[in-house]
Image (tube, rainbow, N blue to C red; front, top):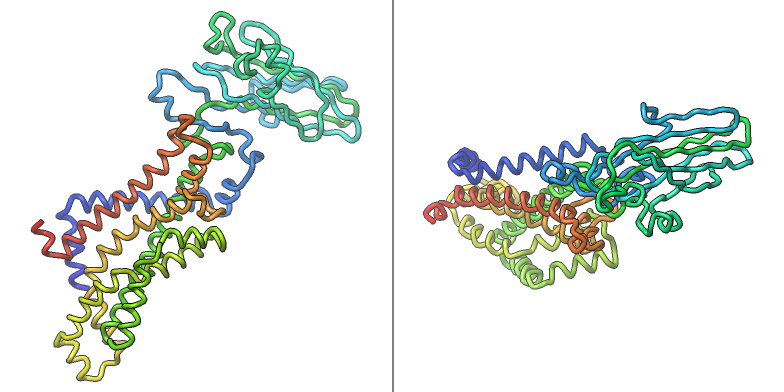
Length: 443
């Protein structure tokens, strides 16, 4: 242990190790922040929820901060609701008529991605009736039609084919915003959606919400299900780090103890361990995990157990065994035998600690490989179906053709986090290897 403490004090002499520690500290801070910002149950609810949860966010939206670096200002989502009173939202009632005005200023350089109008109606038997119209900044008024309203109604303006034909075969999100003098750009100014509702019962009422979906959203953008990718990016950090750390600890310590037992007892025990190791080395690692995920379970706990079992009997056992055979003949081991120390005490107290300085660098460099393995399983569709992870983001991006459609943010954000994880642990692990292995300092 004194050798470990001495080695750790030497980390300050290696700038790469300090950079690695900073990156690892940042990842740990991100993982801790994720747990507090979005509690586990809330993260699962958001990630597995349908469009009812994300009905106010756009599909395939790029990160909002891209507007800071673009000459063309992309639209952000605008939400207007009578349930959220504001200066531009007005609702008046006279007798059995409800008049709703939803006005907003549009100053963006591109058209919205979608337009949707949500209704909430209160009635007993007779359905309320609504007429919807659209007013542009230059005074034009466009009728959006009439409809009977149920308790919860949704009018997707962007999918109204009759309105599209009336707008010159242009999508409604374009035709309702287009400038008469410049068809390629939207007309800037104040727009207004007006609803005139007719009620047929005394206590009936109508509420409305207009969502003008933008093309940028949040810090990380959205996916095909309108989900904010920041949920999975945040929660991917604790899942990836916990996965890598738990499996690395389990495999490293178990491999160390098994190698020590084989070297100490020898004979048939050592022979059995070596034969199991030789068989395990030639087993196809990833195909076995694919079989488990396809025919048994994709739970992250099942995968962790399977990976741990497959990673115990690796070539590391042979390396540790060779070192333990030398340690076994050391004088202090003979002294421990002489004063009657048990086999378990000799293995755990005197043999295993001697190899920890060699174990530490390997343990640190093992973590990024496991993080990449978890992401690879997610990319192949074998990740935990419940947890939001970096691999799951990549799988969704691949399934929906993100690169072909130009949604590079969808792939780059988890990829950058994975690369930083590998870089941080690798820089620290290589530095520790030089510290604990004096021969490498000369290279």
